Length: 259
View 1 (cartoon, one colour):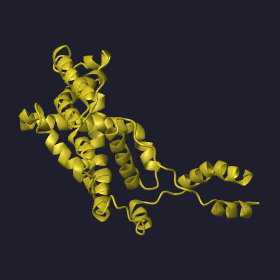
View 2: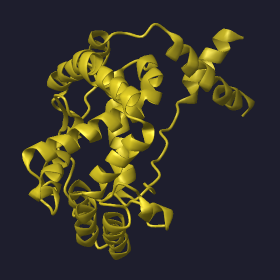
View 3: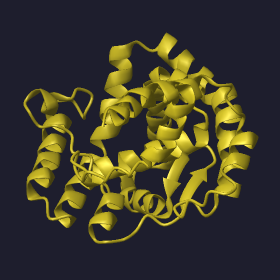
View 4: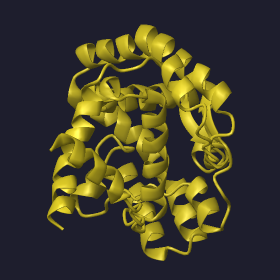
């Protein structure tokens, strides 16, 4: 029993040591995963090069510099106001998806947010709804499909857009057909997409070191995507996953060698 406790105590140290080891590049990571089949990612041989293109080229030379410039030129209150306007346009879609998922309380909150922010909030420029207790629900058609029992489909790494799945792609297309998004002309649609992209990249600034230090950034992003989707589908309360059983005999042998 005491040896088992020692194993538990040593695990964080062992993981830390492995994390401090030299980080392999993506080609090495891909080779290490060659014998591992992720059923969620049957297109991994295509997705990994697309991830390299997104992260090593588009992000490095376009998105990150543009985001840094945007943060430098546009004051934070103004950036927040633009994001509020973009998010407010999604509230009707959130209302409809909440209704389709049989979540009347969440649907009502989304409808209330759109009404309050579109009027008192000056077309969504100010998030008055949150200040009076109407917190953003963020229901989308991908979540609706999941509630109806539709699976994720293959994992996809889309150029310039990042991680998604077949279900996520289909859900996004449907959400953009709802009022008022379906009424926006092309320049307004592109403007909204750019604002969301810059805001999303700004939010990721604090995670850059974590991503850089990960042994396999591609796998890190993929797992983060799936965890976020699970969190959204279950409204912040995903079911607990069973912890895998640990073969203590392996650690017993290791401890014997150390003694």
